[in-house]
Length: 146
Image (cartoon, rainbow, N blue to C red):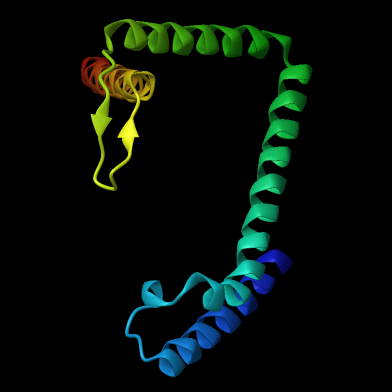
């Protein structure tokens, strides 16, 4: 709760100081401000975001590992899930093709990067299909059960 209050205070300070900077520089949108002008206002909120992110990851890892330590059968199920996910990613990697792709900003996405994007898309499609299939199966199972 304290972090939320600090975040709200920093957000208020940031938004009022950015509004003042926009008025002083005659711009209508915050993205038009030069970075060196906006940075002192945004840095504290950015730092808080990083701290919250790190604390959340640490708390999640502690909760997961403590639960797995208390329940060894859960460790087996977690391992099965991880292996299944890695197999799906492997299949997506095998299906993906990598082609150098020019991007809008003038940069070029490497063939390797393109292959990993394709891998992510294939893995997403497979996981989405499995999720939809399981929801469909569960619905049919409930209809038959009644």
